[in-house]
Image (cartoon, rainbow, N blue to C red; front, side, top):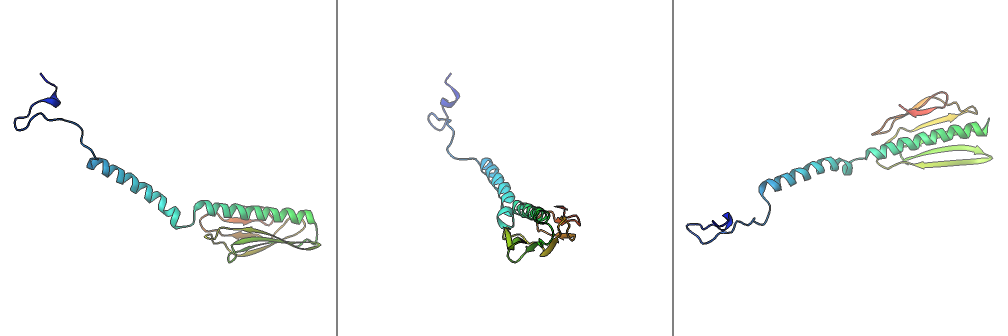
Length: 151
């Protein structure tokens, strides 16, 4: 008996049972479903501020606050160390006096909004308590002791 793919059909000659070229409807639907799920996951990252940008902004503010406290303690009395967050310029500035007026600037991502505050540090590193609000991330709290942390 010949193999099944070479069997004779009543109405036609020998028929070949080779696979057809192309994709089945099920395969196309599965691929479109996977692409749709990936697009739904990826689109918010392109449309709004990224969570990593907000975390980066928070870490930059924490670093600047800790640096300002270090400068105040190193400079001693009369240093006049000041930390200022500026939402318009998207930056955090540390201003201090070291014989002349000095400024350190830390840029923040443009899509991140923060509250504008000014913190003054004394020679012991103490500061006025304040909370800096950051969109899309934890806030930054500066305690009366000058300790900066996320809150």
